[in-house]
Structure formats: C-alpha cells, structure tokens
Image 1 (spheres, rainbow, N blue to C red):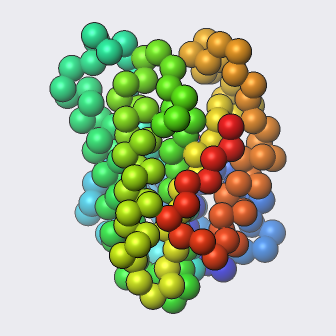
Image 2 (image 1 turned 135 degrees about the vertical axis):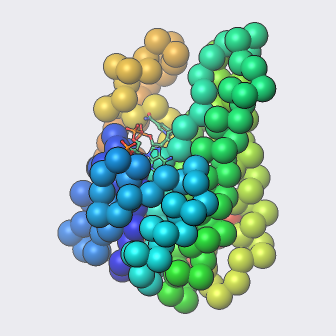
Length: 199
Ligand SMILES: NC(=O)c1ccc[n+]([C@@H]2O[C@H](COP(=O)([O-])OP(=O)(O)OC[C@H]3O[C@@H](n4cnc5c(N)ncnc54)[C@H](OP(=O)(O)O)[C@@H]3O)[C@@H](O)[C@H]2O)c1
C-alpha cells in the first residue's frame, strides 16, 4: 500500500512508520519536516499536501494538539486550539483525503485514553478525543466506496512517559510495540467506524 503518515516523525508516528516501512511505501507528512509538509490546522495546507502526494491507499494521522490546563485557567480561545487542530484538523483531513484514496482505501485517525479516562487539566483535550470518537462512528456510516474510517486511541506510551507521567499517577504506559501493533491491526481490518482502544 502507498500510505501517507501525518506525524510520521513524532514519538508514536516514528514507530508506526518504521513498522510499516518494510512492507509498504510510506510518505511522511509533518508540519516542519517530512516528505510532504502539511499543517492539518489549515485546510489549504491539507489540500495542497494531498495534491502533491498523489493517489494513496491509506492515510494515517498521528498528529493533533489541544491545550492542557486547569479548567479554571482555560478560556474560550484555549478550547479553540484543540477544536481547530486535533478535532477539525482530522475531520477536514478525512473530508479532503477521500477523493485521493484508491477504492478500498483506509483512513486512521488518532485520539487517546483521555476520551474515556480523563485526568486533571484535560477538559479540552479529553473533549476533543471524545468528539473524534463520535465523529468516526457516525461518519463511517455514510462513507462510500469501501473506504474505511477508524480511530486508534492509545494509553500513554512508554516513550512519552517521562514527559507526561506527572499527569497520569499510577498509569502503566503501553509499549511502543503495542502502539505499532494497534495501527497495523486497524490498517488490515475490514471494519469501519471502530474506536480501537489500547489501555
Ligand atoms: N504520546 C502519548 O503517549 C499519546 C498517547 C495517546 C494519544 N496520543 C496522541 O497521539 C498524537 C501523537 O502523539 P505523539 O506523542 O507522537 O506527538 P509528538 O511526538 O509531539 O509528534 C507529533 C507529530 O505530529 C506532527 N504535527 C503536530 N501538529 C501537526 C499539525 N498541525 N499538522 C501536521 N503535523 C503535525 C509533528 O510534526 P512537527 O514536529 O514537524 O510539528 C510531529 O511529527 C497526538 O494527537 C497525541 O495527543 C499520544
């Protein structure tokens, strides 16, 4: 398969790219580096990157940000960061990627454990993840031409544990192998509209 992995140089994206590179043609998309530059926050950037990339069999997005802060510190503008970047970035990517996919193409988005097990400071980040789960389940019902739309929702991964461990007291991180396994499993799955959780 010819697969665009957005965020393919990131903590999770790199391990997924390395796993899939032995059997697939990987095109890495990133905001600051990659085979193709793309900022999922900007619709024009998504469209231009997809135009440059050409026909694809799969698009995997392992990118997206939201503001982490105490509920009382989050103002309206702070919420819009996650809505514009991680939520609408992945919604717009889905909308725009479909015409570039070969029949039977696959789209895989990324969320995370906060959707189901939020921790303090994540009112915005958890909300965005939950919204994406609902989006994927609903949009998959309408998407045609055997194109599948799924989402991978991981727990804290071991390579990010040091950075985030204080937010997740008692949390046992998942291994990078489990993370790569999750994306690979969903890539080969015939199902659509599934939230693939690894917690
Ligand atoms: N780390 C975890 O334990 C964990 C667990 C569950 C879910 N997640 C979710 O998984 C995703 C990836 O996490 P990560 O830890 O791998 O992040 P990361 O190490 O910060 O990597 C993110 C990657 O995505 C790219 N990126 C960021 N914003 C982008 C944008 N607007 N458009 C295009 N590319 C963009 C970055 O490229 P540049 O460096 O060029 O900006 C980078 O390559 C995030 O949405 C995160 O919330 C993470």
